[in-house]
Each structure stands twice: as C-alpha cells, then as structure tokens.
Amino acid sequence: MREGRPEYGGKTALLAGDAHGEALEASIGRLTGGGRLAVDVVKLSHHGSHGTLPPSLLAAVDCDSFLVSTDGSRHDYPDREAIARVAVSREGGFSLIGNYRSAEMLEWDQASLKRAFGYSVKLPGDGEPDGVMRHRLR
View 1 (cartoon, rainbow, N blue to C red):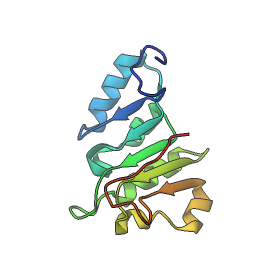
View 2: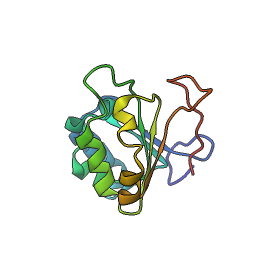
View 3: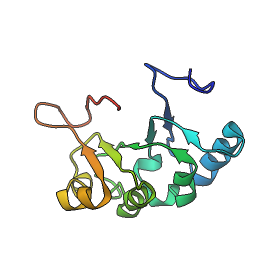
View 4: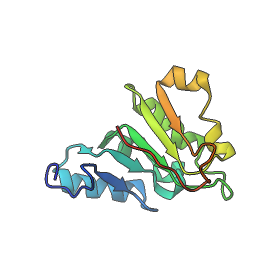
C-alpha cells in the first residue's frame, strides 16, 4: 500500500463516478489533511463534464493519467473545456485514455495539440472493440 491507500497491482486510482468537484475536493482534503492526493490514474467524473471538473480539483490531485469513460453519444462528452483544463493544469504532460474512438476523443488525438501540450492519447485500436482497452499505466 502506498501512503496507507488501497492499491491493486501496485497502482492507485481515483474513480470519481458522477461526483461533483467540490465533494471530491472535500474528501481529498480530509484524506490528505489538506495536501495533494497522489494517484496513478483519475477517472474523470461524469464522463468528462466540465461542470464536475473545476481547476481547483485538478490542483488537489497529483496524477498524469486521466480516463474518460464514454462513447460520446449523449451530451458530446468529454467536454472540450474539461480536457482543456486538464491540459493547462499538467505542464509536465499527461496521458488521456478513452474507452471509445468517439469524435470527441479523436479531437484530442491531433499531433499539433499533443505537441503543444505535451500529452498522449490512448484509445482502442484496430483489433480491439470499442469499450475495451488494454493499457498499462506508466
């Protein structure tokens, strides 16, 4: 266990479900005593909605891998604003991992954006059905 938190295979995750950013921040604050929460991966809340991802929540988390779980068929998630918030908050780069090759996720898989913000995109590829992805965290 890292810092007393449960882990699986030596990795830790913040699985945000549909939680609002303020609730997550309060929980992180209680868990860390006001410090940053170090995890290997964060599953963005509410399929990557900007309404549940305030910049202050990103500041409370020490992480460089972000999961988006949506096929984009409802509400056009992930929101551009949410992913842009992740990009500007992670100067050292990050990984954006999706479980579908949706139009919304493919927008972020452009070489010019990835170069400008120093990130990578991982999506299901040929031979892998959408919704299923095998990815090993760094």
